[in-house]
Image 1: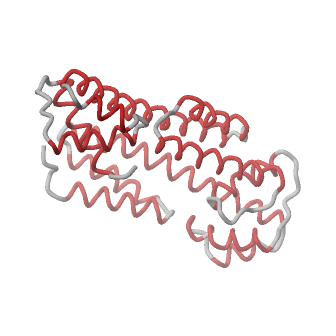
Image 2: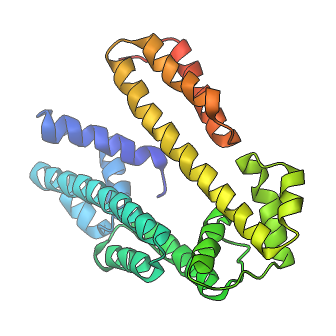
Length: 262
């Protein structure tokens, strides 16, 4: 995507013209915007230039640009969610197929690139799961999850130096002390338990935070700011994972600040 703001500008233009009935004024600035974004959603430069010669064709192109951006975003988000669920269940082939299905129909280069990156990462995690060997280019906690699934399926855990180093890096992110970590790393069984602890703490923290965010938002929108604040205070009263503590603190600061502009 060449200009991050271009897509926002086109979205605003599409809402004004296609939904609210505002006239599409083909100024030099608007034509330049549509020409740029048309090519970013896989409409050829020649087709875009031809469409900009008349108002009906330009309006049709604006509608098509808007559709491609909206559909591609929804398709990729839905695919990521389904692939994550399959990945977490250990179905790496199924997760990769979800991304292949996106690539089979997607035309927008940006979304295709994101889908291909996701597919390659899933393929890498599948290798970690199949072989037990770590990949320095992949997300560390996702690799722990792949190894944990491998152990659950009856494979022995090989306590390599790479795995020890990985656990030493990830344990603090789950608020596990160096003493606890080093004790666990004395045996494969201890390392397995440490992996499970890291993963379970993040899973519990994510679930707790998202549930609290839902309640906080509902209370805030109903005008109960104190009740909304209490949701984040309740998180902070029990949360140990630094990442989720920071997120709860940020939400609490946001509630204590001035209300957002309408």
